[in-house]
Length: 102
Image 1 (cartoon, rainbow, N blue to C red):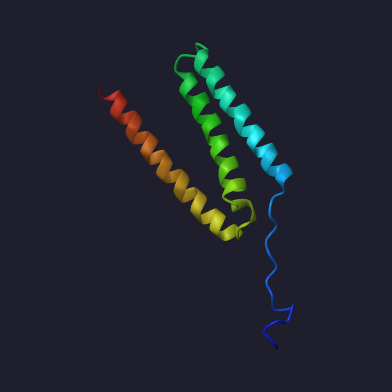
Image 2: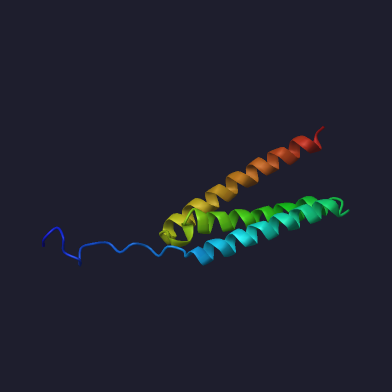
């Protein structure tokens, strides 16, 4: 086959449209406003859990849309995301254990 044969050329993965980027950006702005609103409420100890949940949702939006993990090979996504979440859980756990022992 010749080098320029179209059957050999890999198709470019689906890229998000500007509308998708605008929707994700709007969602991130709303989730940031929700974080600020929760910080003003008197939820006591559950406020940290709620804010961490909102932060997790924002990070998933960034990972999947702005870092294009939504269109990557599923094996890579299934391998990398659990490792990253596990590392994050370790860091948060170590932080909370330090705070509890003070």
